[in-house]
Length: 236
Ligand code: 5RP
Image 1 (cartoon, protein in one colour):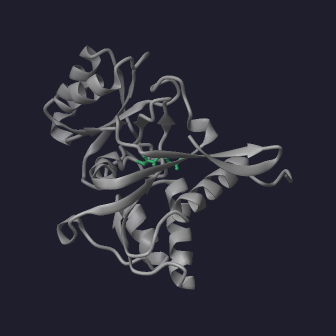
Image 2: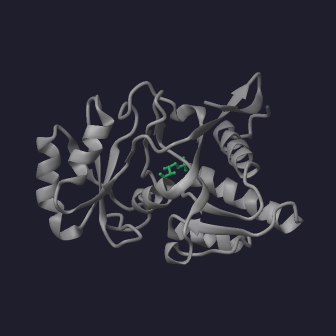
């Protein structure tokens, strides 16, 4: 592989494409957020354009995925217009051996959890750097918080053993504001022993909208890897 090629980008492209190639005609598809999901959305659009795929309806998980779907010609609907989702394709920031996830690197985990949890088949698309033995080892846990509750939620997360930090914008002064108009606390936990319990405890704090632990939701994890200089995709 030549030096100019970014291996992470190649892994993301391949795995996004692999997931999009599993989508069948006449289906309702949850469209995830992030750079890997963006490749899946692009390839879904290509398949529609070529006629290989017909009659797809996308359900976006963010403003970003809505914009991309429109760009690539994928018809969209909202959750009040449909009664099921056949398949959702979405990225993740960490994946543990039990297929539990940390999501929210793009601050979209609230809508992602709604859409991904409704899907009959939830396919997660990651590059191999996202695989961890224990959740929380490389990535902080995102928690979406209603702005007026920022101070009490921060204290409550500290009581749970976390070290919360308000997510700040890049090329925008001040904090990140989510698609719902809320703030994000990124929380460092030294060890997440029981992800299901922590997910519930955090969501029980008044003022928390949703956290980035996705426990027991993923059906298939597709992992993009570089093997012998070549990109490959394996099912985990
Ligand atoms: C957005 C997410 C993304 O899916 C996650 O951050 C992975 O992003 P990328 O594919 O860019 O690495 O959860 O909220």
